[in-house]
Length: 140
Length: 209
Image (tube, rainbow over all chains, first blue to last red; front, side, top):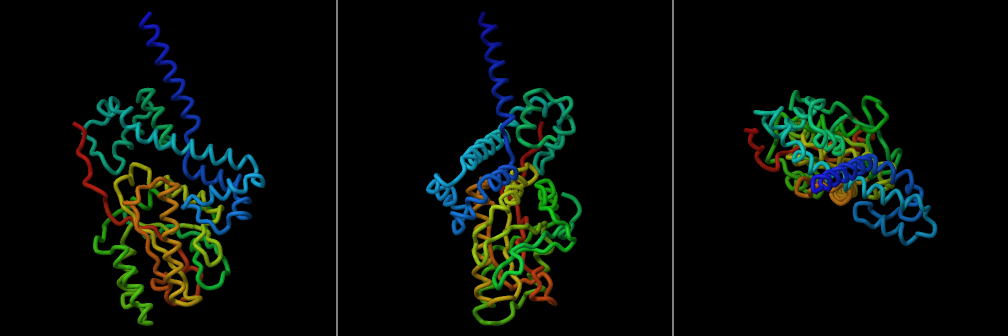
């Protein structure tokens, strides 16, 4: 019974990881999405606000009634997707520890040497590591 | 980290036929699309050398003194340009609102590509200098100030939206003091933002046992 519950938990974890993977997003895609859904509103209502200060986001909120709902959905999607992407990038080398020990012994870390090795071994690395590389945006 | 390539891609203009103190970029090779994060990553990681004495403050001080004295930048086109040219670098395509440091939405994706590149493991341990440049249209002082604001706006966006550690980024505007093509000072080709790989954050980690 215990083993069964453990099995379920693993399945649930795998499912949630799979779900997350569908949602990780590059910053380039996030930027393109926001530009597509919010660009017109930003140029119309927030043309003097620096985007890096967060003022554009608050300006869009202030003009909520005139800004399409898709824009707010895009902002949320971009935030969630890039946050998930960064989390995946942080987690990946941990998930790949065993594979790195097995396939990348002696590789000098830094300058993405370890990543290059893992990608070269992509076909043989284990599920979690492989999924991590994909979620991180580093696998092709 | 392989062969040193000087500026394989310069990218497209933008702020167009704008008056005075705007800078955009003109593509020398006439490629039209913005660089992908993979291309940015590749070029910024082609490090052959660093120049630890070439900091944002040093560059800014040189430019400010030259403008204040209304003298040509003493090291312009020779020393500064030569030293910068040896670093791994890219020209980026960012559109700004006219005479302002506001980044326009059509450049959000390009900014995102830069953030993606800086989050790639090959660049994790590196620091960057963002340099804004104008052509000589407009006044020197205005060009200097605006290019500084624009370089800072890019840094701010990379930090706050792109989640890049601010300790990895320096920003400096050089106005019209470091022309790309000194023989054509008003050519928009001189308007550009460049990002240079200037050094490492910490020692590289040890090999796996």
